[in-house]
Image 1 (cartoon, rainbow, N blue to C red):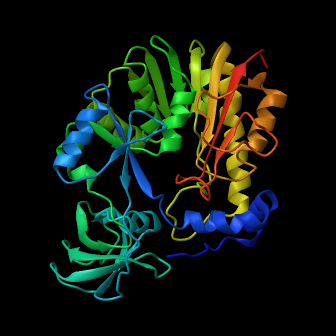
Image 2: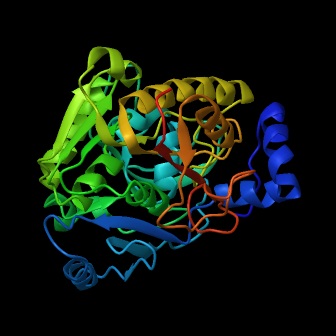
Image 3: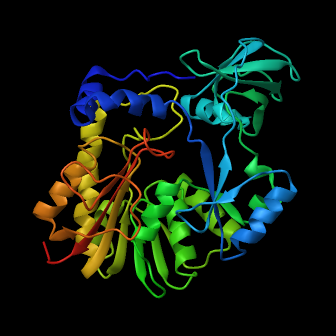
Length: 385
């Protein structure tokens, strides 16, 4: 499945202006998953060796990550050819990308369908007509916009295959959580300590927040902000599943923490803001535009400005994104250095390449790393802005 994704012309030119001819290998890499998929062991409840043993007992081969000691890597198998046979079920882009990896198709991810009967073997396509999987229909065809829940298609064939982690007792007991290696590194680079007051400004769905709680052995306070009530509710379910006590979820627009929570001063702040998600893989096609990238960048500056106000003097801010644009990464670093009283710090784990113009940041470029495209910058507050 070696292909190059199609991008809006302005966006492609912006990316090509920094990567040069290398952009083609970047786009090809984004169209497929990494060779290994990562899950994080919840060391608040168990240890890595026990989880590996239990996974192997149920037939899942895995290994410890050489980069993050609490992470386990599992081989992604494929690509396989999926025939264009059976009645059509069209899945939303994100749902189709999950099906491509072998996930079941859940009802909220169904866009439209042809007529079929429950029990029929159907094919799943994304909105652009790419076949991503086939399986058994467990729900009637979608005929209106009524919200439905549950499994719509039990996927039996897919382009790639992963073990069904969420169906294991390990997941049910809160012993594991899916998370990318760069996302885990971002939490490690923050270097949270027991007793720290930590703010995660854009916390939901909670992966980094809960990893930070694990690193500090659940001893401290992590204020987890998110503007979406639905996402906060989902995060609370995860907090309970993993058995975490140190996280305080708050449904609030964190661009106004300094105004609405004037006494909150943090030792460490994580800023992982909404972004264009250009680094997410595997990607069936790209919907983002250069205009969206610019809009995200302006939004991201607002979070960084508030982060610099709520962090204590000599406190740490980690800024991370799952995108590869210059505007949302190095340009945000420039803004922070020039306006917010911050200086760049070396990172405790360095796996990615240096950034464009900044050696202390790291870019996880998917053409050389079997990981998503990602960016991490670490700052220390040296003066009030």
